[in-house]
Amino acid sequence: MTRGPGFLRETGDEAFRAGLRDWLAAALPVAAGDRLGTADLHGLAFRREWEDHLCRSGLSGLGWPEALGGHALSLTRQAIFHEECARAGTPLPVNMIGHGIVAPTLIDYGSADQKQRYLPRILSNSEIWCQGYSEPGAGSDLAALATRAERRDDVYVLNGQKIWTSFADIADRCLLLARTGGGESPRAGISVLLVDMRLPGITVRPIRQITGEADYNEVFFDDVEVPADCLLGEENGGWRIAMAAANYERSTYFVPRIVRMQAELDALVLLAAGTFRHGQRLIDDPAVRSTVTDLSLNVQALRLYADRILEMAEQGVPPGVDGSSVKLLWSENHQRLLDLAMDILGPDVVLGPQERSAPAEGRWNRDYLWTRAETILAGTSEIHRNIIAERGLGLPR
Ligand SMILES: Cc1cc2nc3c(=O)[nH]c(=O)nc-3n(C[C@H](O)[C@H](O)[C@H](O)COP(=O)(O)OP(=O)(O)OC[C@H]3O[C@@H](n4cnc5c(N)ncnc54)[C@H](O)[C@@H]3O)c2cc1C
Image 1 (cartoon, rainbow, N blue to C red):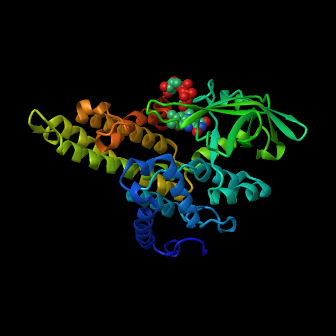
Image 2: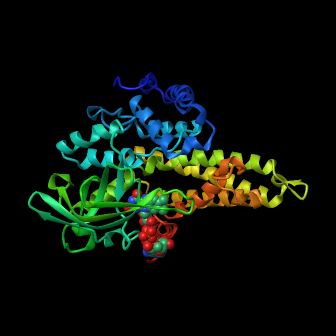
Image 3: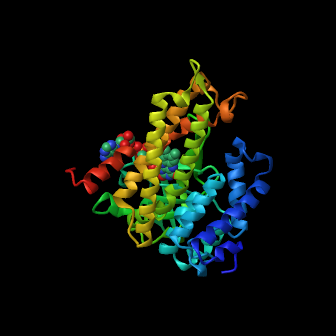
């Protein structure tokens, strides 16, 4: 392995971590310039720029086999990578679906031709991917999806609608689920297609969120002709692939999010220490102290959960019920953290990123609004509670 900075070739995990930390400390300020420490660091433009920079520097394909241009790093090393990036304050990636979901799925299920066609462009970040699963009538109950792909000669003719498709407005390709057969059960007639988002008949309409941003989209397919060689795996065999795809990222998904949550909690304590109400610092208010303590304990619990999930994943055991517990604990406590920030800010809470006098450039306000989505994405809280109840506690359905 010769691609990428020298720390990738360190033999010990801690040397790897130290080398990565040094690399980030040198690279981020140069790439970010005067965006460092501002809200622009987390805007879409720099997210893409930084991700391109990582890929140009050879820091992509971390877990892929070397034969496919990857570094074949262990899950522990990948977790260290995500943890240190979060600690350094780097922005979230844009092509997270390409790197985190599509690439491992292609490596396991793609034909030799599909690997050759798509993987190098994910490695270099020259193609952004989105994931077209959810539909107006199919979210938690994904198997109810109605988008149809009908085989005609050497194409699949695609008709239907997807919704909540993150990054569809900037994506080059989509990992899409469509119904190709009747099947004995709803799951049996589903296939995975690798769809070029520039094909005629595709319309993308961004959905404006409560934050004012438009992170996701509606996507309409009207007689879109998808070449038959864009079928991934077997026709009608897509459900198994979709379920496997959902598992790839799970072992490391929460690692950077927990680091960010700890950083937000630290910032919240400072905010409470610098905010006075009735002549008293809010950090001295017993109710504030109690919530901060509780959140702090829960962040520690999340770390332990994340360690256990990683350890199990290294042994080939999928996250299962622990994955549901960590998703619930993270998303619901993150909302509580931002709720507390709103209480502390008081009337300033209404100042969003567009107002000059907004505290922390309106980031508390924006993040509070954004966290509403976190108990919905990657499985709603109710669905994860069902999983814990049925599979973890053995309660009846
Ligand atoms: C930020 C964000 C990004 C997303 N990005 C993508 C993406 O890129 N691609 C994509 O395909 N999708 C994406 N989604 C969609 C996401 O996967 C769905 O929103 C999610 O699966 C829930 O489906 P739904 O919105 O249709 O809600 P529904 O499934 O209709 O649920 C509505 C309500 O009913 C409850 N409910 C449903 N079934 C049960 C049950 N059996 N028991 C108890 N309660 C139940 C739910 O918990 C929820 O409260 C994204 C969502 C968000 C918020």
